[in-house]
Image (tube, rainbow, N blue to C red; front, side, top):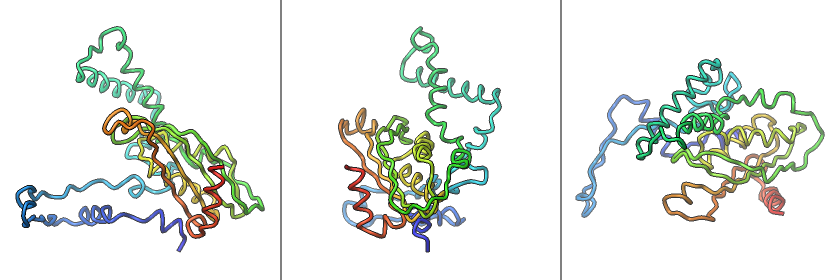
Length: 270
């Protein structure tokens, strides 16, 4: 079995339970706590059925070229200028409600144009939804007799946490070992940019970049690591400035061979 295939299709036990519950028409079993303090502290509730993660809910590369498209991605991509203007207006209306909700006056001078500015900014922050991986790569895959490691590191990343809609920023490092095919170096940065310009979690972003590159080149292996600072941990919650989150996704020889993995980690930290 292809290593990348098994890695990409792996699901957690919680996702498997969610899938099995959504495919059954029978009611979920209710668990009752009957021991000691737990019986008094907890009440049985039906387990909510959640929509699957974008990583498992959609194809890697959809028939229209979009990668892991969101529910309305194709509709957004095909917007006419008039439809795009209505979309921005709809977001701006929601921002006005938010301003009123926090006790502000959206009619005062400093905020008068804020809803429209933010709506346009949000469309830019999430432009990755309407970008096509196939169009982006175009003809930048080259036949080349090279089988040594290729790394592009320290690619700046800016994304929005899907849980709080605040930024997380950092750097991503992408490496692969070709199998007679190489990709234009700038395309590695563009792939990372495309997936980061969405509502994201860092774990999924790291994996999507790795699996997309594996899909494009079918190399001997792909390694992606990312370190980022999350404003949801800095500006709110635990409020820990300076904390970094590090994630990685290793496919093929990077996952199977410790020496290859060690070489990659040494080079990105050099």
